[in-house]
Length: 608
Ligand code: Q5B
View 1 (cartoon, helix red, strand yellow):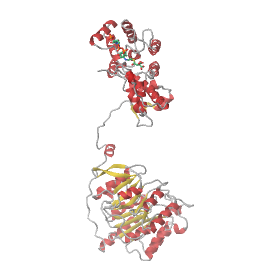
View 2 (view 1 turned 135 degrees about the vertical axis):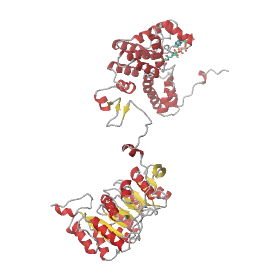
View 3 (view 1 turned 180 degrees about the horizontal axis):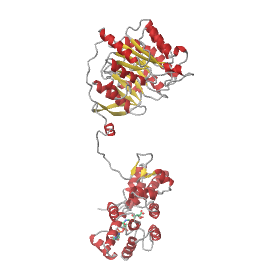
């Protein structure tokens, strides 16, 4: 590997698997460093295409999303870093596909648990083709002030406090991603900061090794000293020992191999990383620290002393005039995300919707405060759910039973009524379920099924004002208004609507009072004296009986009843019920494979 710079201020990457947070963190880092172009040129999200909106400073930018690696590389030929956030199951295959792209130079693999045999193949392919693999099981790496992989260095606050927004003089390589954060901080405290930091990952076979990066740092003129953080297990550190002994590294190296505590345990201990377990003595932290020291690295006596070793090495280089500490710059302020600011109580924002009937933010959705589990466990029915979601309260059982009877009785009335006819015609025109359904629903109105609200309004007004049925009907006639809830196309005085009879019988048995319904019956008696089809129809029966339910249940104030009638809740019962039938008619037509409907000419009066 050797050679030098992996990244620069113009480096761009392709990000595999859409993960909003690490991408946003990369873009925030870009802004902090004053980059002109975002470091993520494209996102690869298998199976998805389009754009993802993300912030670049204060502005939103649209980053192209590609469904395949090949397409992304073709669209962004200058993006040469592949940041792979695939799961351990698909990380190897996607990394190999990326390595095979001529435009990709470096692949960073974040996933832990990639099979070692797969990693070995990736390493072999990368070596043979002069490409670099960072990871697996890594947080990535960073070139201060230039380019950052994914979540490296954590939050923006941490990046600012570690001065990673501008380059320093220290090259740093670590096995551990978590510990690299710690060391970014330490190095920022006692030197002029990081030039580049790489976490190679904690697997037994890392895509690139500690010595690979040390030798590379040795070739980067801006890197004046190198800090290495190894760990027990494996022999990676010995290739660095060899490089030091062979004089391949001419910059000061401060090194520490952590895991010296392993000797305190009686048996072998597996630490956090797959590779972090001491096998033989050679793999112990003590042996590796000693070997590094013998090879010429500055090795402290403990991890606590590492900070001082770094400090002394840096100050010596300054004294010798080999380092002129960089001038401090003030990074720009990254605008805080609204959600974070709200959470911390710094700002408040108006909501755009108000809702009082349901809430799905808790463990389970609630209808008017009643959790789903209670609805199921307490044997609630559709009537109870309607009473919660429409009326925001649990109504007595006879009321919810009445609602359920309304739904059942109005679910369908054959294929010839307006709604079913429209649905059938639409379904036969090849339209889908929702189109067929709404085409039928749209016929519900003042003449068909949607007279319940007006029936309730007019009957209530007439009854409450004490009008006799005669006065009421004749007043309506004078105004030229048909009495809503009265009249039917096929039902007659001698062929009553069975639904009306059933509803009346139920209400007479269970309702405390049926005064509005009795008034409607008196109106019917009068209208029937005018014409035999002017029966109390199903809309009129439901409208008048619901007035009785509202007034008699004791669950509603007068004001609430007026509001329900005024807003017009009750047509909802017909809409809800008839939806069941209209869906049935749609399925029926589809099942019967009925062709396009055309109305017969003979059934139309053509006239001038
Ligand atoms: N006349 C329902 O009319 C219908 C009068 C009236 C005073 C009245 C008509 C009407 C009010 C709206 C209403 C719901 C259009 C009906 C439903 C669901 C359904 C449907 C299904 C299902 C029927 C003949 C004469 C005229 C009119 C007079 C009629 N209605 N006078 N008040 N309400 N009702 N809708 O038969 O002197 O000859 O000029 O608008 O409640 O939709 O099964 O099909 O489940 O699907 O076409 O049950 O009653 O009568 O228009 O020929 O009128 O009676 O003024 O008098 P028709 P028309 P005149 S339930």
